[in-house]
Length: 87
Image (tube, rainbow, N blue to C red; front, side, top):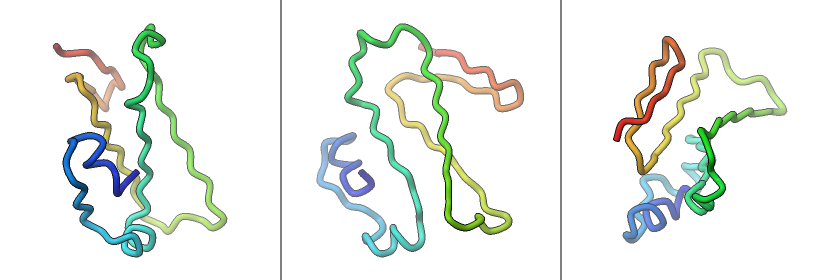
């Protein structure tokens, strides 16, 4: 998904910034493509929960980031956890 993201999302030839080796060794990214879901089945907000398990402890000071690319503009307040749709 990392290599195909630009083609699928932007409709352009993929130009990944990292080689496969660099990606696997230096940037353990998780790509989840939810774009093929049927819009008629969505009746309300979607909760996303991602859990990771590892055979070894994660190093101290490890940070996880999340980037959600969506076709709607939404607002999120990390202090309250509230999200709202902005048209």
